[in-house]
Length: 69
Image (tube, rainbow, N blue to C red; front, side, top):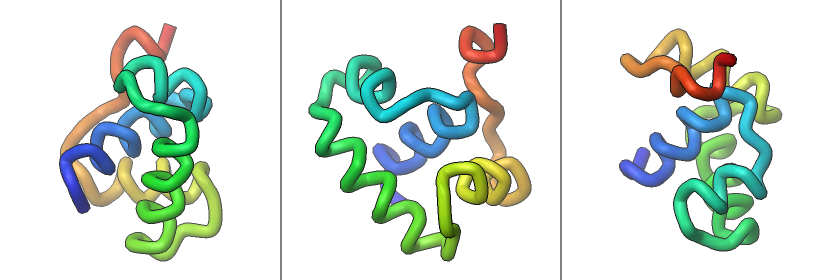
């Protein structure tokens, strides 16, 4: 998984929408959608929720604190 995909996955864990992720990373929403599809395919997840659950179990990062408020 690329560093950018990991950034996006971390935002997914925090519940961010594609538009919010795009703004945070200064990319287009279409670019975020491409990355999300790639993430789902790579980890075998059917949706964003499954991807966030996978990340919680398999990666060593937590959702951004500001997103948890």
